[in-house]
Amino acid sequence: MFEQLVEAVKHNSLGQISRALYEVGASIGGNM
Image 1 (cartoon, rainbow, N blue to C red):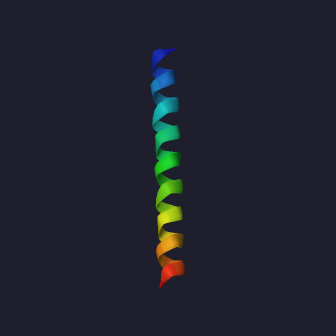
Image 2: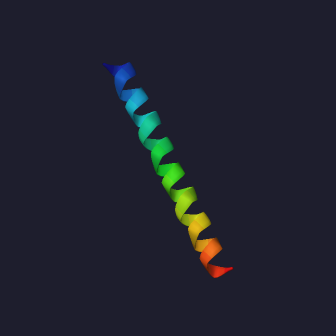
């Protein structure tokens, strides 16, 4: 149960990081 929770947190954090990087890249590309 704990391991599943850790895996879920890892996947969620990775998804949030990917989304954040994508938004930052789109913002920089739009400014340029």
